[in-house]
Image 1 (cartoon, rainbow, N blue to C red):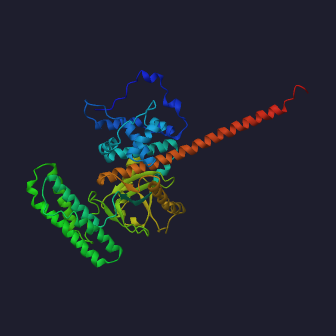
Image 2 (image 1 turned 90 degrees about the vertical axis):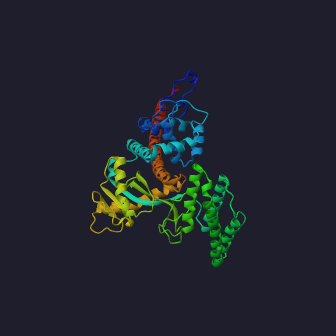
Image 3 (image 1 turned 120 degrees about the vertical axis):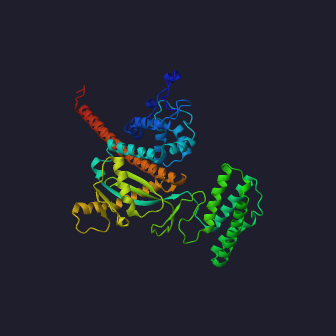
Length: 454
């Protein structure tokens, strides 16, 4: 059922309002007035075609919680719990009176993310760009020059090892067989975990011949359980359980067939789409997750484009899509884009692209813009340390797409709050200086006035 505003209650007439409790000069209060909340009420109303049932959650509440979650690096449970304690959070999400109970269950955010999809979170990013324009945190002319780069957003998986993957696959097949009522010839519940632990000991002692022999034995255990379950597949009736067993059999078969040099390897059973990406870092040779394209303004480092890139594509092949997203979100085609050397052979013609390391024949203005290319690196670092870009906890490729854009929203929110905080501090300092000057002038007049005894 569509969202409808809550009717005023008679008891609320005697309760103090939030505007009477909080400081209206706070940066979150200022930011709440800069965001077009009616847009979400209007655009997200199409997700509720039914006119019967319980009224839907307020779109402003969900959008505000998603903003706060990624701006302050909070989980679904933490942002809802902090909402109850913080009156500024409640005012930001549209509440009139202070509430003492959570507005929604944290699992509602999961359903809302699935409902709005990638297009919905891009609307959230667009509204942060518009709020940045209104607040002065980003200027319109700065949208014409952008820096584009890629980074790796790690997935919430354990470091992949062959022994752990094989043991987990065997254990999951045994659990499915027990759930389906199938009796296996042997489950290896005692031998396989002990052998998997021994593989790690052999690797630590650099006894690689013994390690490889133990891995072959462990692989044989998993294969025997797989074949035993496959032979008795006809005993499982049609339904969801049979589909789960079939999917698991296909996944484990891929795991058993893969080799060290094969493509499309499986690094996590619950996230088979994870990519192994090498970025040439000295401290971390390989990262397991998804590549993300980031586009920021050269002046200010404001996020104007964010997109996940499944499959680990070549950076040069992603530049056209990144610039197209920037144009859609900002209604302004970038005139200049500066990139690193990984974008050679990009094929973009309608935007001037400057590649790092190639300054021959450039004017001083363009050379200065090219030197600003590295300004995107600290912005990515802030999104990983201050935001949530360092680890994605959402499932699947769609989870990577949603999480990447929401991390960009959180970065823009922090930028706007910092700008409002600085601007407000300047105004307060100017008011204090003015009041101090007035007071000193009054004291000077009082000292110059002749006394009555004279």
